[in-house]
Length: 117
Image (cartoon, rainbow, N blue to C red):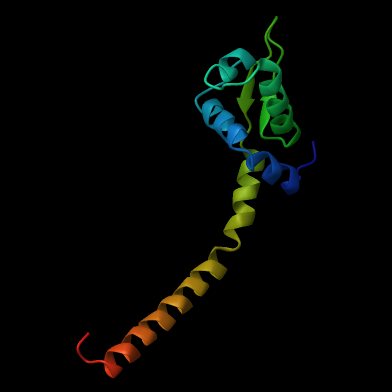
């Protein structure tokens, strides 16, 4: 598999709350489709479609174990997505700090205009 994940596929897979819940379940260990489907109000084929999206995004792997095809979390591509998002941390930190400065300045100006506050 390509060492650079398709971030579009990763973020598209993570955009669905059911798929995120499936990933949370798989963080506890591998599971079969029936085990994954148990807490959801959906059919086994619907869960299988979610698993296929997760597998295509490289977020899970599925093995063949006799009659079963257990799925397990494969976190490398999720880590790549988190790394990509982390690149924006400095931008957001700077933006929030600037906003804090503006709000503090507005509050100070407001207090100078009306000393009762």
